[in-house]
Length: 286
Image (cartoon, rainbow, N blue to C red; front, top):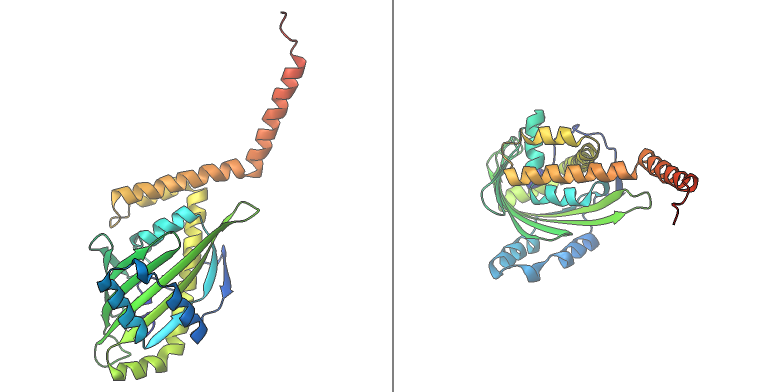
């Protein structure tokens, strides 16, 4: 049941090989992880109304889970764009024909989502910065697990940290904490019963999503023209956002060309040729 809300944020299984991705920590439901997540909530930056909504969920959460912490090979600017505009990834999946997920932006920071498997949700980004994103969601699940529709609320805290390694590659560490509050006692019991199984599915899907993000970053770096062609098919992504994606891809490709061994060798050869020319050319008569 953990996938009730995280399912609309993560990709279906088997869409990406796990290249450019490493697992730093396994998933956990431990008390220490939960307390760490609670301390990291940006409550001071929320309105009174939003602070109350978040508090009600996290203080009465039926399920808490921190999904696997991953290190992703991804350009940090591209990563931020994908987090701020998740419809980019969902629209790409739909273009590829590998998912039945829908994510419609209904406002500046609000979305309507469906995973195609019985989950309908209204989602809102309550807070976002360069390293923290707080998402609140309400929705229902109507599927084979429960006899009657189940209503739930969810708070998700996504934290990220960027570092540029000595080899010049950019890597982003991602941690996703989830708090889910079920609204029926019977559903709470069932949720806790199925949590180990569904938790593993959510872990796997989140891992696949991060692998896909890394793949997309690699494609943007190596095939910017392909990314540009792809953006023309992203019907649910606003033109200015598609333009940002193209600009980031072109910048990444340019940086990669300058940093490649071939480019560095060419630069060294050019400098050496200029030095030889300067030595062989007699100085002009005064």
